[in-house]
Image (tube, rainbow over the protein chains, first blue to last red):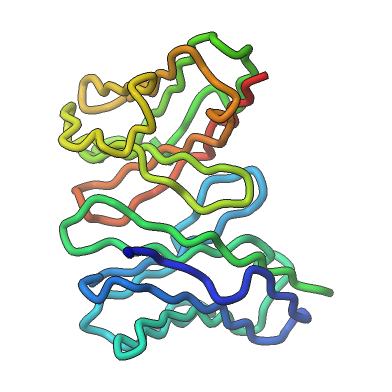
Length: 112
Length: 113
């Protein structure tokens, strides 16, 4: 079926370490992927996106990697800070399709 | 506006009552989306608007759910005869054009007793 899912439901890291959050998708026709961060009591906040014609995209302290061969997406956060603690969702948007399909999310906890 | 706003932030209602949730999108955004998020879950797409039209209503869980948008701005999601399984956070998002980045509001937490 069509789904976007996450490998790890929880991730705990030490402040200053790098974090890697993984996501698998099943629809090979997917051509646009987005990572959102959701803090408790707030709506999802856009972090970074990537289109299927790219393998890697970098932002401020974040990098998204896309491996279309194995249908895998990852979010790397450099020098993780306590403020990065949140649930991270990957989402899929196929071309001009308006729907975002979300996974269940990964809870990232940053320990001081 | 500065961002997507939603009201109320919290709504507690009794089973069987009707509720109306409001979303004010970012000014100038032509597309508007509603999602539902159950506790500990990802977001479930409900409906989207392009302008004031809703081309796809297939994500609405039942005929108790309806939504409208006026003036290519504010949207309301109405749930009639609420049930306990309707309890969730209802999130609204908007984007400049369809398929552009969606920006989310803070959500309305609905609790049906």
